Structure formats: structure tokens, C-alpha cells
Image (cartoon, rainbow, N blue to C red):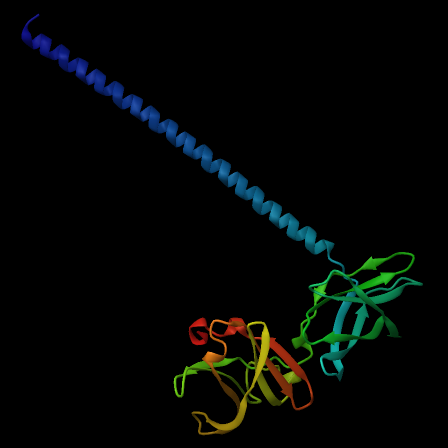
Length: 282
């Protein structure tokens, strides 16, 4: 075998070896892609099953809701020191014969339900009253008791369905005569934050700070400002504002509340801790 024949044989061997390596790598890549494709298919299948389950659960939840009542409405009948006496008006979808209708309620922090027997006012409309403590939050349900008992869904009572929603809190700071936190609100009858159906003028505002476990009240000063619009028209705006020395609560503040008394006697107490930026408080 001459040297050219040997060289040709060597080159042929190299080419065959290279082809074998390429084929093996291609086979590995194909296998990897097959594995990736299988994993994607499994994840997609799992995702589809999860979505399907969630949709089914949502449908079952909706179908499982009780439509025992058409509506439940609350109105303030009387105002006492720390509570509202609320009128409760319920329109039922159905009431079986010889059944009594009950309005059941509880503080959301409690487990025990209180109940009031609803009185039939006219066909399928029932009424009662209950004491709503201003410092509490409540949930309720309407229940039928008789040969066949049935319960409506549990819902939370939103106090701003029967009292005005308060204006947004404004805040700032001052370093004149020491560091002060400035808190206040503004109100006019065109305020978009207010519910026009139950709009009431504000009589007074107090900011209540819980300092080291004890509440301290700061009364807002009331003033009236003229607000001028681009068309040169003006309106009167009530301003309630107070400056609170930061030394009063420094490193001891637990929470802040706003107490509003309306001119018709309505009282509202709202936690405003989360509405004021920490950078202004500290």
C-alpha cells in the first residue's frame, strides 16, 4: 500500500468517526427535544386541568349560592353615644308556610351569632332593628326556620351604605416650633369622594392617636376657604386641620383614627393608619 492509499484510508476513517460523532450528537439532541416536548405537554395538561378545576369550582360556588333574599337594606333610625339603631329591611324571594324569618348578625371577631325575629310588613317584605356598635364590624345572614330550614349567604355590613363616606385624609409636616405632623380633611358638596345620596355636612373632626396603648385626641381647627375654578366660579370648602407634635408619639404610635361628627348627629370613626405615609409620621 503506497502512502497515498494510507492517507486516503486515514482520511476515510476520520470522516467516518466524525460522522458517527455528529449522528450521536444529533440523536442526543433529538432525545433532549423529545424530553422537553414531553415536559411541556405535561405542564400544559396540568395547567389546563387546574384552570378547568377552578372554572368548575367557580360555577359550583355560584350555583350553590342561596337566593333566599332579593335585597337587604340598612338605614339609621336613631343615634346613640357609641352605636346606631339600624332599621333592617329584607325582601325575600320566598317564604315557606309556617316559617319564621330571622336576621342573624355578629361581630366579625366573634363566633357567636345574635338573632332578631323579622316582622312581616307586607308580602315577602320583613323588618327589624339591631344595635350597630360604631367601633365594630359586622356580618349577617337571613335564615328561615320552620318545617324546612334554610340559610342565606353570609355577607358583611358596609357602614358606608347608610352613613356618608368620609373625605380623603390629607397630611403633611411642619418644622415651625418643632416637628409636627399635619392631618386634615376638606369637604364641599361637590366632593367626588362623597356619596351624594347620603351627603351630610361635617360638624367637627378629631384625630385620635393610640400612643403606647393610650388614646389621645387632637381636635381639628375649622376654617372655610374659597375654591376658584378655571371658569372663575367659586365654591366654599370646609377645611378641618390639626398640627400634632411628633414628640407626643415618637416611637410610641400604635395606630391613628379619625372621628367625624356630622351636623345631623351621625358619628363615624375610621382607622387612617394605613392612609398616612410613614415618612411623614416618623
